[in-house]
Image (cartoon, rainbow, N blue to C red; front, side, top):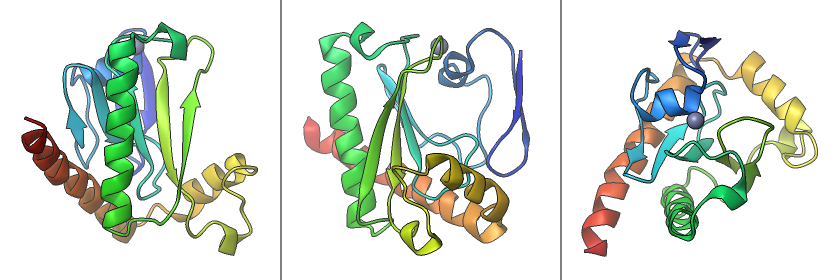
Amino acid sequence: MMQTEDYSGEIIKCMGDCPACAYANHEFSLPCGMAYEDEICTVSQDWQLPINGMIIVAPKRHVKLFEEMTKEERVHIFEIVNKVISIMRKNEIAKDFNVLFEEKKGIHFHIWILPRDGWKELGIDPTKNIGDLIKYSLNNLKTNENFEQIARTTQLIRDNMVNFLKNQD
Ligand SMILES: [Zn+2]
């Protein structure tokens, strides 16, 4: 069982060995809800970090390494990452983004989309000082105003992904 705090300080509990699989199965949710899902992946605000625009894209299948994804999954997930960044850039959530592919030992593989804007001003390099960035967000960004922004960004992605899918057909 996993028990942790979500980005707003609510307790997340889930049974089973893999929280990401549980999330994909809707066994728990975040205050902002899921931004997008299809048969291959989920798109969601980072569960724990209250950073507006920090979005996680994860395959639904329990994959631990990048190379375990099928070509179909890789191509699709890249397309989704591209679309999510494009939506956020167009709507001025941030100008620049880092994309991190995290292969953490034994953990369900996922991709972080991290807005770069605003960190330098705080003396934090979003590439070199990721630990400081995480600490800063947990100590300073748990505000109602920020939770509302996070919810708005999730809604923005949700609305725009619907259009994306319509235009694909
Ligand atoms: Zn999993």
